[in-house]
Image 1 (cartoon, one colour):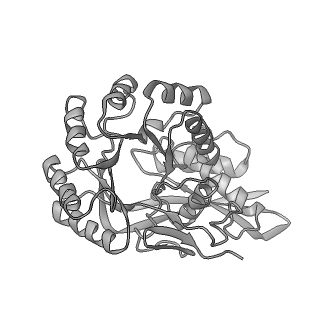
Image 2: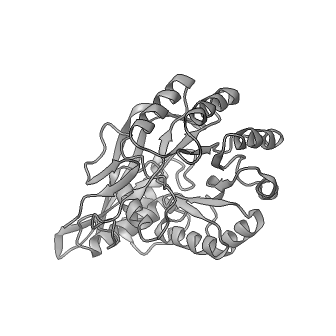
Length: 336
């Protein structure tokens, strides 16, 4: 079997704010695999990174060195390289299924299943966030996720309050993502303020790595806590069990490019379900190649929670695909 990689930089339609800064572009590498005797049929997978968050990305040179090693030896251990692991797994499954973008043969890829997703609101000034909220509501989303922690907390509360004045929790589900922005001494007070607005859940209120403190928060919180960044770098089964049993979160959120690729994500799901911990899957700003694969992976499970798979429209130069979003659901035109 042969393999090669190529790099592509995608550009955001509008600068997108997170607690780690403003994103204007997104780097990805595409792994292609094929059999030497059938070079016309190739599988493709996306290796997607977010600088400062992806545990396997330090710089372009070392990342591409690892990709070169992978192309030379597809059996190489990628336990500590989740984004490359996901890209390789996807490429191999795509090749196995004929190189047509089919990763899993299920209802989603056959165009028979639509996956509910949340509408993502990026950080910014109050006016920009309000503009995004109005757009998502008009597009038919019934679950809205706001990234918070970049502007004044009171301004964020006012934005959330403005939604709640118009829509009850039965009409619009509100999620927030703090990306670890709260300090320990302020977390409880801020969680209490958010709980008054019937927030569905908050992702990663404090920085990861503080297991005992996060456990205490999960025990006392007035609104459910979902772990996200907390799962990054936790690769062995024993570590995953220790984290879940120590923190005992209300939810976990899985990103295949950050949390161990397909095999790692499946293990997290199995361990979480064993402990009656609900979960959902989100993309890590992948292009349509990676997003398509993540949607197909998600559709392998009977999970009716809205997923975080609405990032396909972020870029001016995304790769064309059969993915579409309508009324807060993502679907794929049937692949023949």
